[in-house]
Every structure is written in C-alpha cells, then in structure tokens.
Length: 552
Image (cartoon, rainbow, N blue to C red):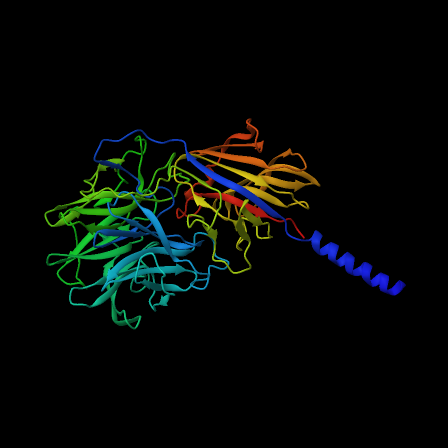
C-alpha cells in the first residue's frame, strides 16, 4: 500500500506540474479604434485621398463590367493579398483575400518585409488572375478565381527571375508576363534593373518562348535610374503603353511611361517623364505627399482614365507610421501620352469624383470589435499559421493563448493586428489576464516589423502583477522588447488599456475596467522608430491584442 500511495502521489505531482505549466489565456472583451484627426468637410462632388488609408502599397486595379477590384502587397502578413471591391473608385469594401489558407504559401521564418510583393490583378475570359512574387518563399506565381471574392486557387509557380510580374492579354489572345528582372550581363550600378516580357500559356501555367528586355535601366540610362519595377501594359488605339515605376520607394519614387507599335517593343519613353512624382517639390511644403509611384490605370465608359498609385503622408522627413497608402487621381491624355500631374504639381488631397454612382464603402475612421461570430478579415497575423489554434472567439470576446513566440521572433506570435489608418488615432481595449509566472504578458501591441514595436499590458514581474510598457527599436534588443516602465496592479480584475498615437508621438494610459478615470502610463512617447523608414519602407503599423508566455 505504501508503494501504491507513492505512485499516486507521483502522478498527482505530475498532474499539478502540468497544470502549473499550462500556457495562460488572455481575454479581450473588445477593441475600439477612433481616428482623432478627421479633416473637415469637402465640396460636394469631390472625394478625399487616400482612398485606402493605412498600409496598402503597390495597388493594382481591374474593371469587370460596373465593378472595380483592387489588390495590394501584404509581405509576410496573413491572410495575404486583400481584394477590395468598388463601383465608384472612391469607396471600397474588403471582400476577401487571395491567400487565406495556410497551405497556399509558407511564410515560415520570414521577416515581415519579405513575402508577397506587388500583386497585379487581371480578368480574362471571365476568370480573374493575380500574378505576384513571394520573396524568399518560392518566387513568381499566379492564382486564379472565378469570383474576386474567392476561393482563389493554390499558387501556380512560374520559372523566371525577378519580381513584380503582371499579365497582359493581347486582343489576338496571346498572353504575356512583363516583370522586373536583372539586366543582361553584370549590373552597371546598384539598383540597375530591366523590364522583361515573355509569353505564357495560361491554361498550362507555363512560360513559353524567349524572354526579351523591353527597358534596360529606365527612361534615361545615362542617369543610372534605379529599380525599374511594377510594370503594366495597356493597349490604346494602335499603341501599346508600358507604364512602370522607378527611383526607389522613398522620396525619389516616380511613374514613367513608354509606348510601342508592338507588344514586345521596341518601346520609346514619353516626352514628359516622369508622369507622376513629387521628388522635385520643396521638402518643407505643407500637407506633404511623398513617394508617389507604382501605379495602375483603368478606363471608364465616359472615356476618362483614372490611376491608382501608392504614396505616403510623412510627419517629418520621410517618417510615417502609416506606410504606403493607396491614392486615386484622374489621368489626362496629352498628345497621345497619359499624364497624372504636370511637373512640379503637388498631389491634391481632394479632387472631383469620377462620373459614377456613389458606392457605399467602409468607414475606417472608427470601429469596435467585440469578437462575436467569425474573426473579421481586417485582423492580420504575422506569417502563415503552422501550429495549433492559439485564439478563440466566444461570448466573452477574444481569447488569446500566451505562447512562447515573442513579437520580435520569426515564429507566429499570439498577435492579431489591424492597420493604423490615420496619422492620429486611439486604440482601447478591455483585458482580463492573470499571469502565472514571470514574463507572462498580455496587452496591446503596435508593430511595424519584428524589430520595431511597442507593447503595453499586464505582466508578472518578480512575482507581482504589473502594468508594463516594453519597446523594441532594433535587432540588438530582446525579442520581447526592453522594459520601459512598470506600475503595480491589483492582483485580479479587468483593466482597460489605451494607446493614443499622434504622428510620431504616443500617450499610453490604463484604468480599472468600469471606472471613469484614465491613469497615464507614459506621455509624449517618441514612436518615430515605428516609421516605415526603419522597416525597409515597405509596411505600416498594425495594432491589436497580443500575448506571450514567460520561460516555462
């Protein structure tokens, strides 16, 4: 009996130990977003840019009857390649993602700024195509769907070098892919690229025939233009037009135009390139728009042309937490060439609307999510899922399991983020979390990539339940972020957290749930380090619920 009792005691010890080692769960009753810098009213018949505020770079657009669909880059965020729908080009709704299943792609161990670059959407014979590149995760591919809402196919991989592929189908039925690739021979300078074309058999999903260079370097090769990319081909009358970006993704970004009598060239540059840029404008001008480029065109029934493109709204220098956003402008034709803006002309924040019936889009200035039913597709995860589910939705809100992957790791942290869409905005949440050992943390995370983030939440420190503020501003710091401040909390009870961002500064506060008074945690915190210039100029800030466990 003594031996049996010892066995029972040992089993009990194991069970108790396993319970003690269980990963804690944080419950977020709701998350609320409110823009706090809403501009004033605009004239009747006008619209305001950007049309897709927040991180939506590399826009590509297609028209199908009365409907317009748009996609943008998502890099290593999941689900990837959002598909938006509009009927007036101004107001948009998210209708799905082209990459929404874990098995389509694997973003394992990727930095957030790798992954999906520059998707290009096209419709042909009633079928939709998106061509794109998975950088460091497979190369060039396309997906197809009968409806833009999906489901989209698994990737069809293509065998050619480079990035930014787009599909053009000639009136005679021949299909071509044009893309950015390495030049013939050794590059003459850093950033020297070429634009290539090759025929494709869409039915077989195979490239056919030889590849051919359309543009070597850019508009003026003697000037050593850099990063010719994002090409699209359009046929207007008897001319084929090749439009592409060059100049990099910062203040020198621009859009250029070429034309030819044949789809495979030779192409001559237009007389007034670039047709869109802000690089020669005074840096101290008010209401600056920067980094314009990577455009795509669409024609309306009334004969007017419109272009979507990316641009930024810096608060200082090239610093913005919003990343590259999607903008819209009318395109004029002058002597047979398309023009967005005249040289030296600033991008306007308001313009006359397209001559289309008003479409009811999405109001991104405010929202509250109580996590009832299905998870909103607005919530993104870092990298594609590859483990057991770590979040659940229920009657009491969102439950996040605090796992070992920290925000600065290359795993998949327990983090759901939504885009910051305005220069000034406030996020609030109500949180119930009982950390079980040192390092257990749950709260709000603001992140632009794995090396730059800010986290406010409940954490156990030295055996005590604390409110902590952590930040990471470089790869040399802890992947959990460095401890900035800590405040003692009651042992139990829900708390509310608030993160108020104003351009390059932030105020952080907390209160016991249900009380009226906010207690400052830190004010006028410098968050310029969350700007896209510190994250390769690719992404923008996402904010949302986050949980991580201590060492177990």
